Image (cartoon, rainbow, N blue to C red; front, top):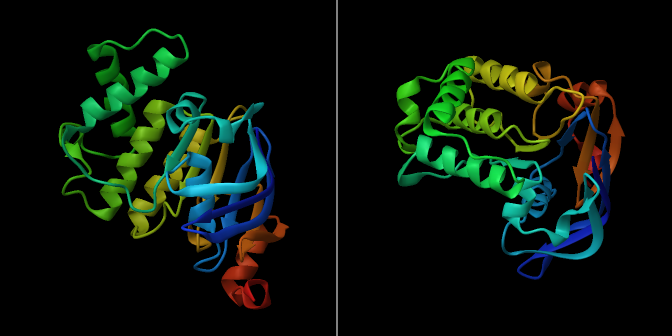
Length: 247
């Protein structure tokens, strides 16, 4: 579903990704681990199309399309979802307004009929219930006044509503207590563990992988993948650290 070949990317003239190659097949969950400054979040931003990140070399193919040729909204309509380490607050716009417009704009881009208000509310309430998020939070401005755990649950609700083909989750476990971590892990499995979906989990720690078992684990250091393996690799890194891999 996603194929990255020799990807080089920079921001403000500084090269961050230095020849990264990675392939995630349909139906697979891959985890990327690595030390601070390795380029993990940059990879997510580049795939999502964030402004300021310039690709200088390499290619990215998503579901048969040249991802780098698509605008961010086109990537979203094609089925890409980017979950942020620090979800932004949007004062003045309720979750319901934001999510209904996001979903219907994607549906229109795919020549699908938009959902009515009643249809959308039924979907949103079902996703909130599944994540243990109180339905009153759907009426509140997006992430305003939310705790760290509530913001991450809210992102899982967003992901459940948008139903992407491919989710890039950038340190979704950051700042979560044990209960919230389990809820988020369960949400990822419920929404994205399917034969027609794939996930790229970006994380520092093994703990999320206790709930979301990856098919493959990769170590990203100095802008490239330096080692890959099965779930046992994450356990090894937890015990021994990155050591020479990060040198």
